[in-house]
Image (cartoon, rainbow, N blue to C red; front, side, top):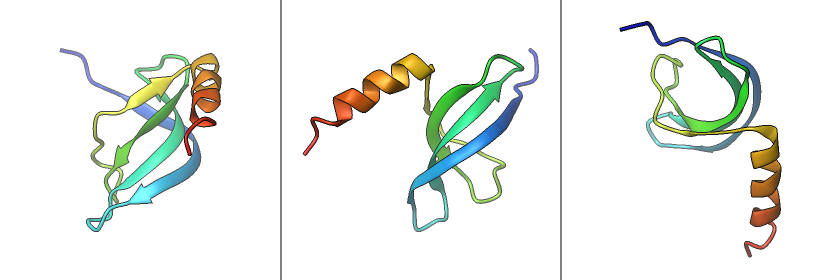
Length: 72
């Protein structure tokens, strides 16, 4: 089994923070040396652990942006 690698290329913002200090963030992340993608997930305060999350291409993120405009 190969090692899992990730690099946070750019931190775009924190959506929320739990009482335990975990933050839900939107970042641009490269996983296993692949092209960076927009990534939404929870991160431990020390960045040593992460939850399962969602990754989006730029086109997917723009579609999501349009969908969120209808949320009231």
